[in-house]
Length: 301
Image (cartoon, rainbow, N blue to C red; front, side):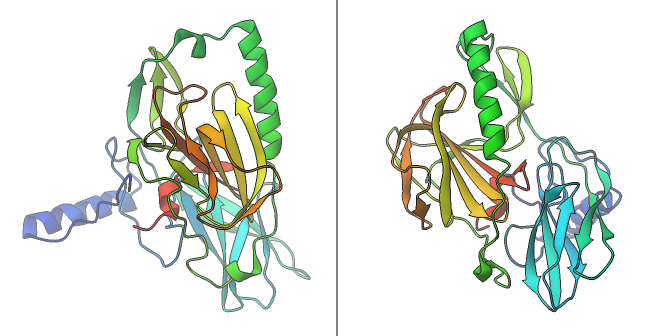
């Protein structure tokens, strides 16, 4: 798992003091050092709440006989729970400023209300990579292709389907399995510098595995898009429900088609190095309410 929560055992009074100090710093919302994750309270179920940019917040909406609706602006949020207590799961954009934010909660027959939550600071590592110059300095033709593909995939990511009824009161409903067994070669959130030129932070995780290694669906899903894209290569988008999507890139082959319904563990394709890739690996992104979030939060600890 990356990055692991820093909750060290108290092997000595010195270690215990350090842990308490770090928790105190997190409570004050002070920015931690690079690569460090502020200690946060653990809550049951998946994803594991981590209210930082690129993380996930679990926002309590209160009890009620009817499942409420919740929105981040105009974007619908995933709401799960039961009459004793409902929660909105909020995917937090990597670009969000730390501080207080809020979601809108709507219950039939009641006035809308705002529910606050706090985003804590977090710093991600930086990666320097060397790639073919054409993938950094695009020709007019490649740039036009990329812009067309970006517009198409933005439409794909607008997808919001109702969450399965079985999710509502099941704490492990969103627990995923890794789509491929491989070494983590690039973590989520790392700021990428290609040939000395800074780019956007890494919006997924890279899992290095041999060419042709089977790639599986991490959770029950519907295939909502497949294609061969300039940057991402052979790509599959999956809709798991409730605004929770997965994207798998750089595949060597695709074994599904749009409209297919998959059970967790079914084959999606195979590891490759298509698109902008320096070697065989799977790039896996997870999107929640149209924001890319850390996939490791959905995996077993």
